[in-house]
Length: 307
Length: 151
Image 1: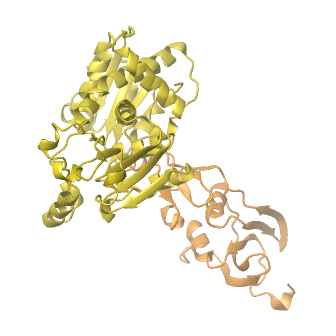
Image 2: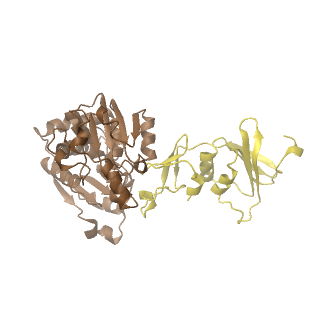
């Protein structure tokens, strides 16, 4: 992978993705030494993403500096994001940014010379999550001749946008299951169409469930609906229980970027199909591999293909 | 077309925008910020029969020569347009619009949650597609109502 930054999944080729996953697979046994400092800039709350980047950098032998919460930082005083990243790049060898606005990572990357990873920009993209999702799919179902169902909030779900785009690199049929009000945004459909992806949209999960190798569940947020009743009705419609899975293949891989609320019932957790905790754990080796490769690139001054 | 067939008289000096797709003239005027209150002399012909286009619009604006940024945006809704600069009744320059690959600082992103709509030191940037434009930052597609988002 020869990128300066990781901003969007659309910048990743199949070779890029496989290079990161291959390195992730071997990294636990033989971690490279990277005595680097990673700057953590999270303008939105995060548990998994932030902690796994933190753990990944430390397991590589480096350390992290953390902006802390927005409430306690100079952002509160009205500093622009462009200023914040230009300051923090002086403290760190690479940056990880989460921000509530779409396009924040793309903009920030133009102001810094160190590698920057988009850890979520509003309802935009979350490409490092996609890499760990693909790692999990590869380990459990393989990445060829694959039928994937993605269910939930496809409109605002940044993990969905990145995953859908990255899957166009592989021989994957994609089914999108959501209420009509939460279907994929036009920009993502446009990209999928451009890539000639095999895509179908559904409002009902039952019809397509038996065909799926992977079921990727995402959270439908209450605030997306005008009233509580409508939310409950929709959320209930896509809830995954052990009974739901009776209709699915025995080796279905059930994934979720977490946190879940109740879209997957807790009695699914002990079933062999439940893969979401393994998926979350994969965040560390995959982010170790990603950071290692971005830092290696920066050190070589290779530049390569700019994102 | 002989003089007695002309629907709109010749202008002395200014710009004639010809080969605008039929029905788009008012959007061209919107792009130029012309709503009648500025006092410009403007002639508009709409849905004029055209051999090449079926129906076309023509916009004539007196005493004004367009900027490159204005031409760039017009090209987005009128890719076949010709821009004729007229001085003393003569066409001194006749240019086809060229669709730029990108437009900078001309359009506002329609996505209110895009980073370019905040107080950051960047101008908007759109790549020009076969149909419409796309924000380089947040990927939002803008196809209809482009004129509405001119900054």
